[in-house]
Length: 375
Ligand SMILES: NC(=O)c1ccc[n+]([C@@H]2O[C@H](COP(=O)([O-])OP(=O)(O)OC[C@H]3O[C@@H](n4cnc5c(N)ncnc54)[C@H](OP(=O)(O)O)[C@@H]3O)[C@@H](O)[C@H]2O)c1
Image (cartoon, rainbow, N blue to C red; front, side):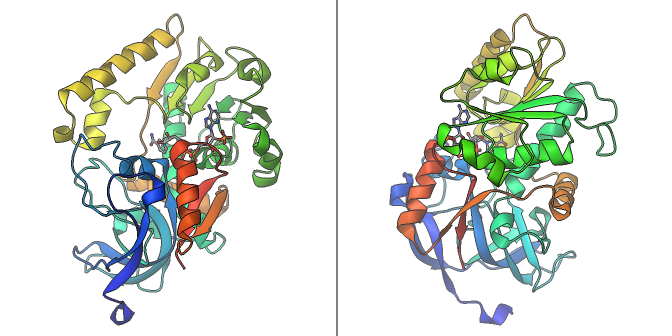
């Protein structure tokens, strides 16, 4: 299999810090196996995260240099072509999917799933179940691990004694999560209801997406509110109506009133991390003092938002470095609990790729997770 691999390949890249309108398809060297745990994959599809467009846009440029051109997409799916000498769980011909990020992020190589071939370490990959298409698999792992870790943490913060998957999970609890049809939200919603068995899930979308929720996520949301027109707190059941809030949008002030002020829990993936977590995620050498200062000030603001309540709040960042969670998510996917809502574009159609990456960059208008079909 490995002998038929070309020396160069097509890849979607950001040639410099730029917006998606400047992304290009370039012919670049095909990556090769360098480490014993490397896996060479012929890519079928790549998932684009908001973070991909943020990094390419230069969000982290003050923290360290990236190698240009930036290869796009840290997650995807494909078929194994070759494996390093220490790989034990995968072999050529296996269909796989996964996402490549762990702590600290900065020394990690830019992996680039939006390309004909990619090399990723075995720890980030799992076999693709036959019931999941390559497109669906490409949009699953990153957001699913993030949701799984957030929901497990929510159980801990709520004081649930047995937080294992054999425990009570979210049974009997009411959960609010904004943006049911976002990349993170569509997966979070399915996991909240099907895997964590919440009693009630209330979510939001904008007007045009209201009729899509039941079609794309049948039986998942108990109530969906048009956040652009309606009073979300009132429509959701009033202030303090929820045991758990899984916050997926950069609007923490809107989420706070929804949590029960005495017993509520808010886990958030879209707010400022604490300086300590930031250091852990980026690496200690990549946290200038002024960044730590700004993040510290944000924590004071959040404490002020929560004043007078006993709500337990925490920002979490997904971590593919926890292999047990990656395997738990793989089992959830294999069971069919989570089938990502994806919008697909072909890599060869660069205008469409640019347009859809822009929707992801501005966080408006896209339905589901953006997946780029490579073959
Ligand atoms: N901490 C972590 O580990 C982690 C992991 C993944 C993502 N994130 C972060 O989470 C955020 C969301 O990521 P994503 O992948 O879900 O983005 P996305 O797929 O681009 O989702 C954006 C969608 O959210 C909707 N939306 C925007 N503002 C909203 C609001 N105020 N209320 C409800 N819905 C709203 C928009 O829908 P409409 O068109 O209907 O307005 C838009 O389509 C990003 O900032 C990302 O960086 C963090």
